Length: 347
Image 1 (cartoon, one colour):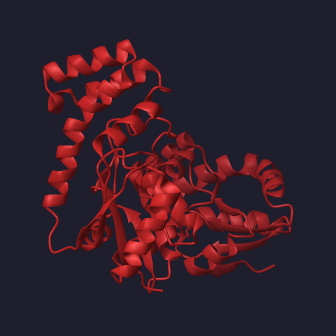
Image 2 (image 1 turned 180 degrees about the vertical axis):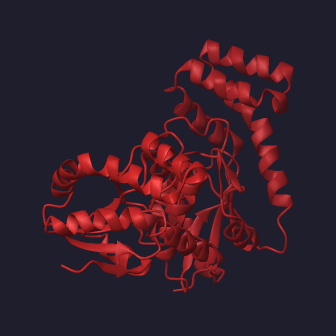
């Protein structure tokens, strides 16, 4: 059965109903992979290291022979694992650049009766594809507002209303502050964040308006790709104007469910910005269970930081939207009406 080489566009379409096997080493996979791909390593991290060393220090022939020594004893196990992952015996396959590793596994699976589709130019082609998505032009509309305004919850409600939405904080596994890791899975790598974001951007209809939260370029340990963030900085902003006491109450209710040591760790991260006295008072409030006081102290810093960010945006339209509560469903409807009234929604 011939091995079919296909471009990244076709792989992304076929992976919706066929397993995509990434045969790079576990370490390579963890650093970044095509969203939805399954790790199916030809070599372990240590084996890959040994082969690489042999290639650099001895010769290509020595490296190839070493690779065959590792590959041979694992052939049967790899075929059995492939059958579990692909009962229909049809797979998509790739390595880093579509070279010897993927060709070897494709040969093996073809021999075992699989129909194999090989990604031309490997994972490297997806990285090129991802970078292309960041440079495209999008119609963006940002939801801004101080910490505790419920921006993320509004995005969730907009999704329910069938609005195009990109939730950057969800993709980043971080809420964008010193408290951003609370209740979130561990953050992945910058490369994986880019990979995930690219796939969401590729699914957008660029002629329609897409909603996002107004984010700085850094979200925890990952960064929004610069070309895309520059578009965000130039996009119009609907700024939520919610009374401070309402925001304080909302955040206090959320943080009262969090362990005290976790909250204390978050406050400690911003102690230089809060100052010694405010940090001491915030930590004491946490210990006493006075979450409203802790939040009030933290918001002194975060409100100033957000306003500074807003003041340094250039040539953008900012519309203040007064709201009385943080009811996400109601606020989503209000924002939709404001956006329509101001001609911001293109459909």
